[in-house]
Image (cartoon, rainbow, N blue to C red):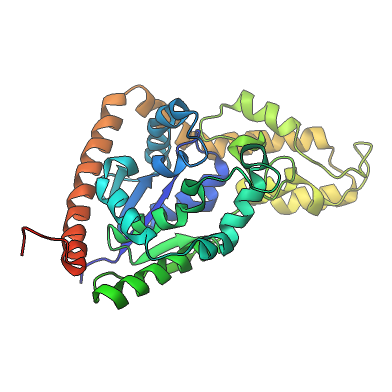
Length: 337
């Protein structure tokens, strides 16, 4: 039996952090064993809110590729490709844009939330939001269907995007005949990792992230600033570990000692300074294999480029086959009839 196709990806707006790894990458590494995986570097979508800073997107394409490889994405098992180098995705985006109304796009909860989060770019009431940004769910639908994606690993906050894709597929098939596959979401655990400051999201732009490339000294500096129980004044004061971000990360990367950390914290037997030092050591050890692989690929950029070139070439061949079916269904295959 042929493997089902998975499509997922990340925007190249900076190096990837531990939230990306725990929330997605480690899951992708497991999925590539049983699925035909296509992992995109979504540079076109990154430009929807970085259109005035293209060098930022350009410079981070290879950084994201390195993070993919360092995290364990195997180019012999998965296809890694650059979105903008697959023109069939752009073509599909145009065709799909005729199938979605503006009110429907504006009702998308994920889009509404992100517009609110980007007030500095789009204005207090979203008056500066662009067509490209509002329409990025249409582009995502094109990403998925260009490869006949069947299973899409997502978190709950991204379910509205998958439902929008499913609507587009149903409408396309209704108008033009059965052509496309309706994708199914695959809910992932730990998809949203909190930031060091307690923010519900660890983000590149929020300054609350530990990156996969961070060395122990950098990790130590960042962990020092992590939010702790504000009611713990002295080292021997009992505290509530559930409101402490240091304990939150212990649960993620230091599971063998997490019960001790919790117990000592509650009894006032553990000071924050010592607790942060232990977390720094555990975090550094947890990221060490990724960091070492990352250094290897940083010193061998030709390998990274070869992975991207070959992956993009392979991805485009598949997208071309899908587009033949789409054009045939839409009656725009004028010279192939």
